[in-house]
Length: 143
Image (tube, rainbow, N blue to C red; front, top):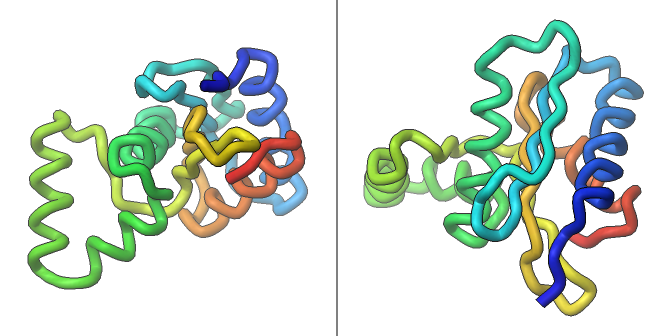
């Protein structure tokens, strides 16, 4: 199975930040996790609040943990009480590492295998996700 390289992770982060600057977003943090949910690369812009790093990682972590983008986790959370309870239980089981908000996106190989996840935090969650998606595609990768 393919693995995301450090160079690819750094290129991806650069593309996410470029998109965020083009959108004139507040400062953001961007985290890339490998398939084992280990931090591969991280950048936090000057002026970003300290919790944004953890939020970015949690968005990516949740995407890896459930095998879906965090926007889908957010949708499930709002579906009904059962889904809310499930996601709350997962968050508790993981020590608070899952945040059901858009901005965590799976990165896939050309064959469709998950090779990483990227999370961004600092702006409105839908803008965070847009920047991540744009960064993935600008880097020549797949979401």
